[in-house]
Image 1 (cartoon, protein in one colour):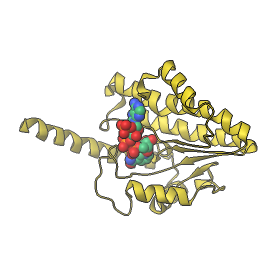
Image 2 (cartoon, rainbow, N blue to C red; image 1 turned 90 degrees about the vertical axis):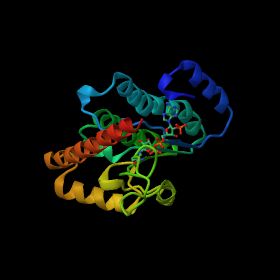
Image 3 (tube, rainbow, N blue to C red; image 1 turned 180 degrees about the vertical axis):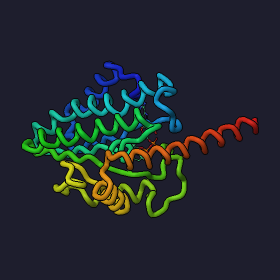
Image 4 (cartoon, helix red, strand yellow; image 1 turned 135 degrees about the vertical axis):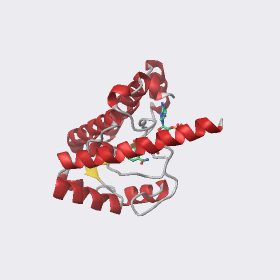
Length: 220
Ligand SMILES: NC(=O)c1ccc[n+]([C@@H]2O[C@H](COP(=O)([O-])OP(=O)(O)OC[C@H]3O[C@@H](n4cnc5c(N)ncnc54)[C@H](OP(=O)(O)O)[C@@H]3O)[C@@H](O)[C@H]2O)c1
């Protein structure tokens, strides 16, 4: 289904598909970011709409559809992909940043609601991974490939303390964990300095993306 359409008929079909099945693991992985970093005022309306509908609304609707079954069976696991883009306010990805901050807050609250019912909720925090979304191809110490990231995630399920003391949250990849600890501990995740550094980084990414688009346009 195309989550961007947010159609009741699609959710009804999904409900029929899972009705009677013992679905005990839900991985909320679906996500959309901005095509390239863009000032908020220049963000295309469609992109702004799709990010909120896909990242927030689709996650809420699928979770609400599957959770009652988990509650009745008294067991379940719900993993939701958040992002450092939401943990650290990210200029030029403002809408994506807000959508992921929403998911973080929602997960921490939901985790507490579902704990007494035997359903474990974990918000997965992450810096960059080599995927279509990040447009980074080469893995490095700070940017794992999906396989490395998934392995780290699955090996740390059930950790109860919470990354940086954030309830029902984990930052499973080792270098992301160190980065989050350092920034949160010494600078503060929403501090002016962190936001300023993040803005500089994303202005730079935007400049490079625009130059690349210009080069490609000239080739055609
Ligand atoms: N890559 C990173 O650096 C990074 C960092 C932090 C967090 N994350 C989060 O990780 C999650 C996975 O992203 P990714 O990096 O793997 O990016 P990706 O390669 O772009 O994958 C996004 C996933 O969402 C699905 N999707 C997007 N729009 C959809 C729609 N309208 N309807 C149905 N499915 C749709 C895609 O399905 P199709 O393949 O069918 O298009 C794909 O499975 C996202 O929630 C993202 O925000 C990524």
